[in-house]
Image (cartoon, rainbow, N blue to C red):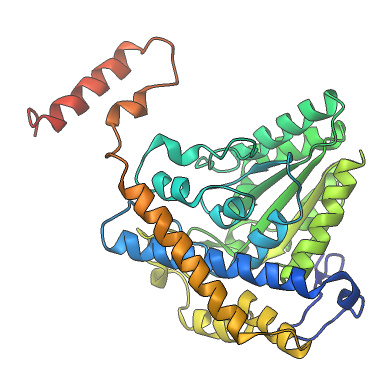
Length: 356
């Protein structure tokens, strides 16, 4: 299966064009946009990790190393399309137009954190594994029945492909030729379990064969490959040709969450090696330098602009009052069940110091 699904690459680790056609497809402005959006995502991620370590936000889910996979795919969809993220895909959602302030509010437990700006079709992050594939498929089917050309882009990790929701989503999308792009980020681990212990399949892409879904593997650290191949899949869906399964092979530098210790199950020396060899930002920088379009002054200005944007979002987030525990119990049932009423009262008593 590895031979049937080779990893597609457009820019090598050394920053060289593997496919000579990309010089015509990727303009200087587009390459700068790629780099700016990835840099913005990385700077935001680092800021959030620091905020968590300072106790200013709750448990955080980092994505450093996966910027090309998320940013490149998010840039391939259009205004009016739908995005279905997991709890790790804030690089994608912020690229698609989510508010940085609301992204920060999510990590302090405020309900506004899951609300996108007006007109942005971004679902709240899915914490249950693989449930968002069904949501994405259902919304895409609804759009098809309404005779629109809107497309769903749904993210999920390698561990999600072991869930029933993954198979149900692919099967339904295949049968009804639903306009959805299934975008898998395969970083090799479902929390602490390496891929070879999760499944007997050599690739994620081959799982699409049983559903007659066109499936590809791409270098998830090569933003050119991610962008161009996802764009093809989006256009297939938009033209009524049905779903595509994309396996983006990537690597996450940090822990599964800030509550995790990856040293217990992953060779930490590999992280340093990956930073030197496959880092998505370094690769694009090398390519831009090779093409003669790298600009240090532009980089400095871009970093300053992003820093100001993140600090403004942080200031806005900090002006919000602390999240209300009652929000947990709202918006599920019209009238709370007696069990939930009991739980809510217990929480209120704890907050008032009436219970230990």
